[in-house]
Amino acid sequence: MEPDLALLATLGNTSVVGLQWGDEGKGKVVDLLAEQFDFAVRWNGGSNAGHSVTVGSKRYAFHLIPSGILRPQCVSVLANGVVIDPIQLLQEMDQLAQQGIAMGENLRISSAAHVVLPYHKRQDSLSESRLADKKIGTTARGIGPCYADKATRSNAIRMGDLLDEARFKEKLQRIVEEKNHLLAGLYGDVPLEWSPIFEQYRACAQQLRPHVCNTVQLLHEAMAAGKRIMFEGANAILLDLDHGTYPFVTSSNCGTGLSAGTGVPGSAVKSVLGIVKAYNSRVGAGPFPTEQDNATGEKIRQRGREFGTTTGRPRRCGWLDLVALRYSTRVTGATALCVMLLDVLSGFDELKVCTAYRLAGKTTDWFEADASQLASAEPIYETLPGWHEPLDAVHKVADLPANARRYLDKIAAFVGVPVRIVSIGPARHQTLVQ
Ligand code: IMO
Ligand code: MG
Image 1: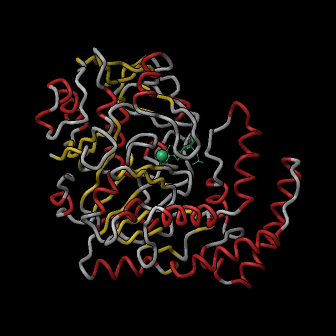
Image 2: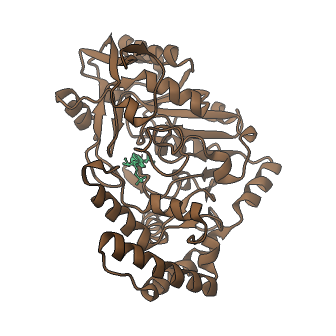
Image 3: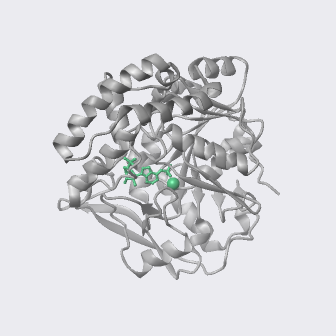
């Protein structure tokens, strides 16, 4: 039996945001909620995101397409704020089609979304190699260079340009020439040829053409017709370009960019679900005050299968950081929490949660997002009793072990926002709603 989420949907248009450094389980929540909504709209990021969703014995992998695509009545939208790698997108569409997921009118792509091209991926990898031990640890999907070109304007290609062959050709020729100066001069790399790129991407454009439209119009007309919309922020608020642990962040507004990335005003969103793991994890570089680079971290990694969906990298794991979580809740405006992967914490005698930091000789409970400051924050922990019972067969929050409930109560009380959903395993039915 699937959990009853109808109540959440009655709240109105909802957004789903990650409250940590990504991989919180947004894909599972979007999949569950999609049954209640007419649209699932992604507003940012690109194929740096990675979710896997389990339905029965099937496992689906997502990078660009919202997991809402699994629900036939739900239209999935890649809005203008997303950066689209057409090759990756078509591969994902093929893979889903092979798994029996039909894709027609139920996938809409903004003509104003920017296109990730091969030189973006090259630039991403070359820049990281050059930074050596100062690198950000990106996913090498070309995300940063694509958003940089978007901001520069003269060097950008949007989905609409891709569909206009003459315009695409003219722009691509000019941009590749300029990129070659950069690739050769700065990185000593071999130059790219524009024409094979043109041929390959022209073919992609033909396949994607039926899905491309003005998604701002689409969404406003949908709202006027009383349709229910769910918005999905890819990545997570601590990776947000403005409010994350800069510079160890991604290049979009993951927790705060809904309006810019969709053309729908924030006032149209009635509820914000903040997705949080019962512990913390991070892939890539950057400060992580509660990291456990030891047997505890290893135990969490193994139990939580904490290896990246996009890059396969082992994720860094550690105790739940409540100082960071309260900050994330405030900045995103989360109105309720979904605590994911609680089952991973079964089997610890004691669990620690960080409730303050020692920073520059003072105790503080405010999260300092600037990476150079956060790097010297020492966590101050509170210890809570653990539990040993497995949780995967529990049906109600009230049936969780008392110490698991105490752990959830601590989170809600510290952050000041209720816990509405608790996930105790990957399956749809392993979801408790309260
Ligand atoms: P989902 O949607 C975890 C991290 C990368 C790197 C930094 C910058 O699956 O939760 P980028 O390639 O974006 O320039 O890399 O951001 N990162 C993520 N980590 N989950 C994600 O997305 C991420 N998207 C980006 O590891 O540290
Ligand atoms: Mg992921």
